[in-house]
Amino acid sequence: MSDQIVFFGSSPFSAPVLQKLVDAKVDVKAVVTQPDKPVGRHLRLTPNPVKVLAQKNNIPAFDSPTASIHHLESNIIGLVAAYGQIIPQTVLDAFGGHIYNIHPSLLPKYRGPSPLQQQILDDVKETGVTIIQLDAQMDHGPIIATARDTIRLDDTTISLGNRLFALGTDLILNSQFSIFNQIPIPQNHKQATYTKLLTRKDGFLPWEKFQQLIDSTRYHYDPHSSLACLFRAYYPWPGVWTLTPQGQRVKLVSVNPPEAIFA
Image (cartoon, rainbow, N blue to C red):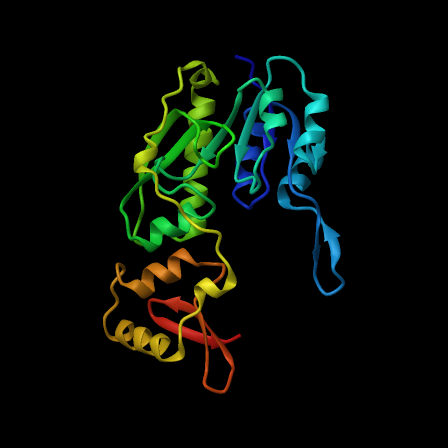
């Protein structure tokens, strides 16, 4: 199979994947990412790191997946890594089934938008990355390859995500794209579990609960405690936070030792 690809990605985890592909001299024909977003006091439209990296390497970048299909050549692969949007059926059809996703869990467990956070929240030890062939449903397609890893006691969403997406990229590169020649294995959908789209409110704890958890951690730190898992899962966003009885926002900035600041 061709090692020419169209890359789909928008999150901070996507840029290192694209960089590994570029460093490996993979022929990235185009990048599809989300539109520029307003940033800062002046709300200046700013491209995300994936688009910046594409422009740096003279790779055409598109804000819409449908725009990319007009530039497809025959026998080309689509590779998705934390793109953050559902890819339309017309785009899936344009790739003739050869569009694949790097997902940071051992599917069918932890489908959905927050698998990294939920695995840390659940204090699971065994994790991994799954490469699937995309279909019309979220994280539902057949499995191409998996690689296992372990969640460390100091892992945050950032460290775990960086490691798993790198592991998935290496699966592809080390096989010289031959894994895409394998026959996909359907997932056992009866074993599927789902994660939700996080909001800022997910990191909120009532003031009394916040104080209670900090006090218990101050005298005995347990990496498996609910506060430790919550802090690591929600670092750096949405964070663990509360409101004082006076309405001031307080954010947890360290869990070992516990430390909170007004924010």
